[in-house]
Image (cartoon, rainbow, N blue to C red; front, side, top):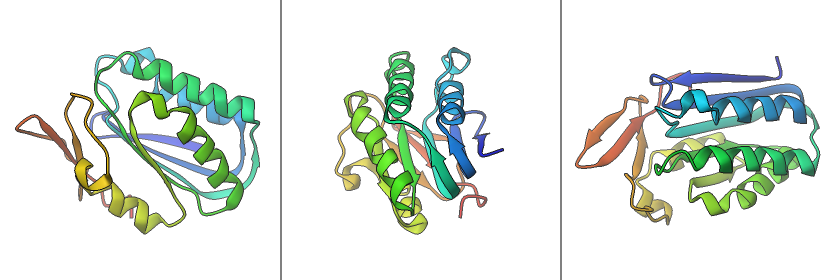
Length: 165
């Protein structure tokens, strides 16, 4: 399966890994699933998308726009922001991820595309003010080491699982 989506932390987080030839249809199915009404009661707080295993891409700019539209519609169900780190070492996946990032900018999610996995993981561990981001009035997020969700003074803190290394 070229796109594997795994839910972490009682469906509060997502690890998405792409491999082989990734098509626009597969990408749209994954984005639709992650932003579905089924998750409306308990929103996704963080996503790590790993494009490293991709050997080919068959995704149009219209499909990137459609993926962004799905994320935008999904974000309207919640006032809570999401932290999204995308690791894309190769040029085409990197460019498509940057396009998606620009298209979803209106949402107010804290998103960034990285060429190095270690940089993406380190970025997810920083508090929002250090990321150069501002809270939209909802809780701010801090990702650290084990993807464990903790509420501390209205600040959500997540820790990464060892599987994301």
